[in-house]
Image 1 (spheres, helix red, strand yellow):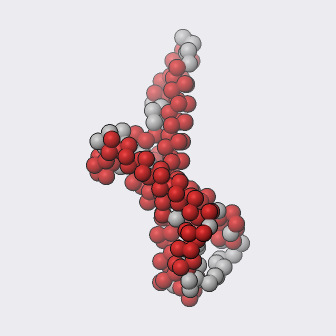
Image 2 (cartoon, rainbow, N blue to C red; image 1 turned 120 degrees about the vertical axis):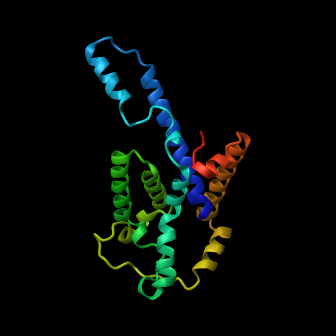
Image 3 (tube, one colour; image 1 turned 60 degrees about the vertical axis):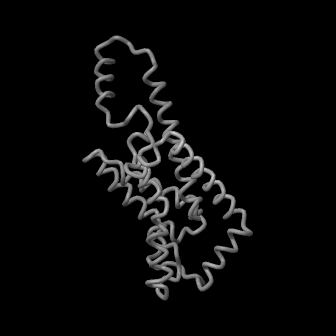
Length: 207
């Protein structure tokens, strides 16, 4: 689900960034008591690494797109082609919570140590990928390796024709694809209208 993963993940990221910006804007608008304690609190907030403005100013959205597809980029070649006889499954290591937690922890360390958000953007993309793949229906993979180190095998001989058929007949597949495509079209048109498309390609920013 190329469009679903990228488009819906982008939409979720923009929504969270908008809600975060509103939260910090309301916080900043609250009347402050003129006391030493409040001045110390304001000083600490001004030094806080959490931005009050939109998170879109601090996140390279290109990494968000990469993260939204990363589990498939890793698992599909391994499970479908390189080690087909071993796994016979396109949802293995990178579709697990273990993989998400590892990337998130490393991303948090990189953010705290270097104030870089690119790996956190990737981890958010991975998180959305697991949701859109409804991995809670495959707990053996989602909770790997808690339920065992060996992944369940499946029949992937006709996986591509089955995927194409699902895009035509299964609303659980083509509806998210359509929603994701509409979000991507809206995003692209918005960038072109504001003459920011080339800037986005170069820097991954929208502001």
